[in-house]
Length: 278
Image (tube, rainbow, N blue to C red):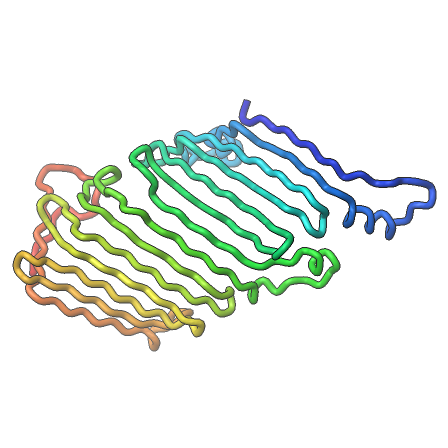
């Protein structure tokens, strides 16, 4: 089978000859609700192949379980949604696992998402996102301006050994922090590595930072060092979204920064055949 499905919904209602559409609606919104549903053992390559029979699916393998539990009332439900994907394989990535946990708490109207991903060698990243989302006004027809919905989110890239996925040796760490709305977003991202090596070309430490304010002004800074001989590369850039040539500026500074990448006859999958200079 492509997947297994099970579901149970309990919503007691009083029906009778005098029932009106308005009274039925009031019952539905206030009656005790209980939902348990699951879609398990979903074979992702087979499902993707059904949606696009002309092309090979992007996933060579992978399985997914999805469960939903809810109780309370329609206007104030306590909800837990869990997604578990495992043994995902696409290109050089093998045995990737993903876990997503979504929850809604009616007491404070908090909608929260927790994400994690990993390989057999260990966790790759973790992330969280949350927003306040009162359901009762929405169900009453008040509407919601999604562009003004305030969200906080963060993503952490845990120390990742790149040699498990590529010919590059070294570790990367990073963070992304978001706060605001689609109309007024703020974003801060950091990326760092103590040292990276590709076929004896070594550089590090490396640091990158990107910030965006509510006016969508973006600032980017990237630096790379070669302590063995005092090499330094510094790139800074500023731009405003949406991108226009008049708002874009960039500066590059280099001091005795040396590039000596030559894989010889080894095919490492990188787009460069050779790079040398200083």
